[in-house]
Image 1: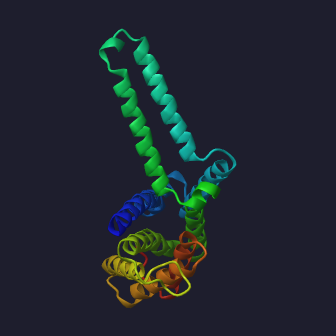
Image 2: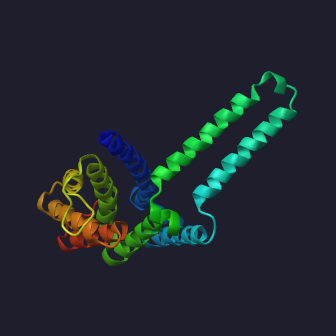
Image 3: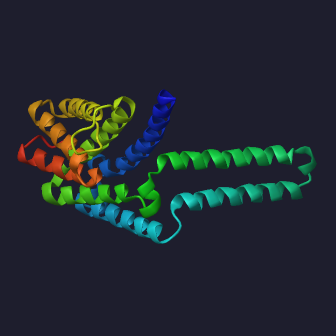
Length: 243
C-alpha cells in the first residue's frame, strides 16, 4: 500500500512537472530565436509573458478556475454529441448507453488527472507558481541581463528533478523545511551535470546548485527564489553566458 501510494504521488508529480517544463520552454525562446527582428527585446518579452500570466491569474482567481471550466466543457460536449447522434438516422445502429458510459469515463479520468495535478492552494488561490515564475525570471533579467538563463535552467532542472527525486526517494527532511535530503541531492546532481556540460566549469555550477537547493528549501516560493538567486550567483561568479 505504501509503495502504491508513493507511485501514485510520483505519477501526479511527474504530470505536474511535465506541465512545468512545457511552460518553461516559453522562457527559453529569447535565447533560441532572434526576437530583435520583430522589435522585441528579451526584457520586453519577459514583461509581456509576466503581463499575460498576471491577467490569466486574476481571471482565474475572480472567476471559476480553468479546471472547472474544462470539466463543464467536457460535460456539455458529451451531451451535445449524444443529442446529435440521437437525431441522426444512424442512431439505432449506435449503442447510446455504451457511448454515454465511455464518455462519462473519459470525464472521470480527466477529473482524476486534474485533481492529482492540482495542489490544494492552487484550487483555492490560483496557479501562483506560474505567476511567481514569470515574475522571478523578469526580475532576474532586470538585475542580471542574460545571466537570467542560469535562473531559467535552474528552475527547470533543479525544481523538476528535486521534486521527482523527493517523491520517489524522499525519507529525510531538511531542517525547518518540507524538502527532503534525497530530493535535494537528485536535483543538485542533475543541475550540476547540465551546467557542467554547458559551461565546461565545475566550481561555479556547484555553487549554483547549492544556491538552488537553499532557495527551493527555504524560499517562500521556489519559482520566484530559484531564478533570482541563481542568476545573481552566476553574475557574481562571472560564469560564461549561455546563449
